[in-house]
Image 1: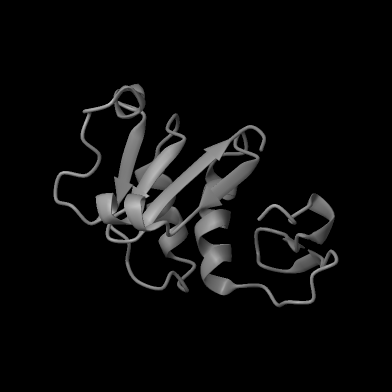
Image 2 (image 1 turned 120 degrees about the horizontal axis):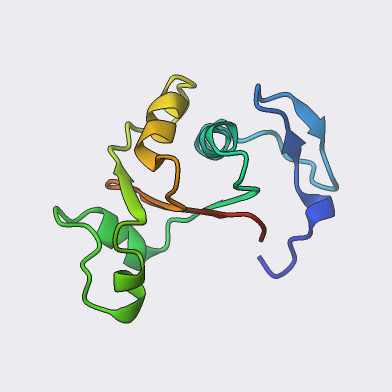
Length: 124
């Protein structure tokens, strides 16, 4: 990730049409598009959406209780974290509306249950 620049990223519209391939030669990854575009479509205030599968936080997403308020960082998310019952490989565009509803109008962090987190902000 230390080699990623804005110019190498593939850019697409909310319908999944590639508008700029950047310097990358790869295709649009449908699952990534569904997850990211759900947030971008619902929340124009959030310009950057990040999703990961890091083992530690993915394990938290798999627990029945989710993120516990047992650290300063976790307590800071109290009330600002939402959960979405992840529905599989995220290739169905219909899931975007349900993800947007789960995220809500103010949250910037959403846990995809049994999958991992999405975080978003006004900039990188």
